[in-house]
Amino acid sequence: MDENIKSKGGNARAAALSKEQRSEIARKGALAKWDASTPAVLLGSQLTLGGVTVDCYVTEDGERLIAGRGMQDILKLVDDAPSTQKAGSRMTRLLNNKQIKPLIYKDKSMDHFMPKKRRFNGRNINGYNAEMLVDICEGVLDARKQGVIKTVRMAIVAEQCEIILRGLAKTGIVALIDEATGYQNLRPADSLRMYFDQVLKKELSAWTKKFPDEYYENIYKLKGWEWPGMGKNRYSVVAKYTNNLMYGRILPGLTEELEARNPKDEKGRRKNKHHQWFNDDAGQKLFSAQMFTVLALQRACLNRTGDKWKHFLDMIDEVLPKKKAPMPLFPNHSD
Image (cartoon, rainbow, N blue to C red):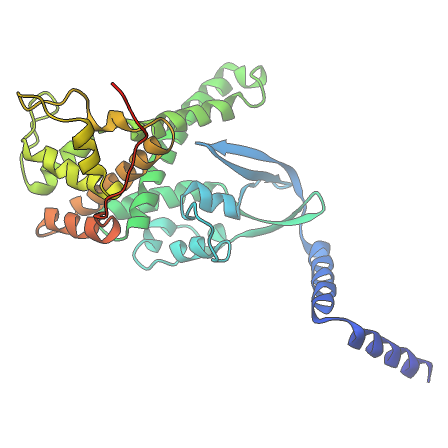
């Protein structure tokens, strides 16, 4: 009788709760059950890799983990714009890509690439084995070498993977020397992390060079021309290609505005380079983003068969269509 009364009372209370309240109670119950069986993290902190700050952890058995969302951010799997996609979905898609998956997994087990559930400071976390970052970078770069990188997003990821591996290689030799000499016991706790961040920023800064040598070399290779090096004058048509690939696709009317503000003299020369008219804030960000994408598309097309230049232009037109509507671009600017 008493049990029936209790049961009826419990049912009545449950019926009085809103759907959101019942869901929250169920969630807390599930978390409490999960906590009881989830191993705790020994140490946790934040690590900055080339300007991306991520949570990282060391488990009680010595496994190093990087937070799941942080792993995606490092690899540029996630767009800067807000996304409705569930955190971790892009990592899952990458690891399940039929062409890239064998190059990433190689001889490693499935467990190596599974997210690990742990507890830290009273909250639940998901992390990936830190070594997985290297495995992914190597696999993606192998895929690029074999010509199976087809999308713009994956071309950007491949560029990021190359930057990461360069940084890790340089940081690794520093760590080895520190261990051999005993300096690891004397250096500040965050000095290696700071060095790694500086290395990656140095690698990333190559993209901020307005027109990297590779940009011109790739144009020659895509056209099937012999590359003479930067020491010789380039074909004059390359300047027209640049107007098309860069200025004509950044903002509407940009090419016309630049030509009006930066005209040729009687000898056909301009007083300044077009890119010098971009300001240090918004203008430089627009230019750098455009160059990054153009370089990524160039690399993606170098391994194509057939007319590589046509493949490249088709991808450019799809990803970076020309902006035709004129609009004012610059504030008043005097020489």
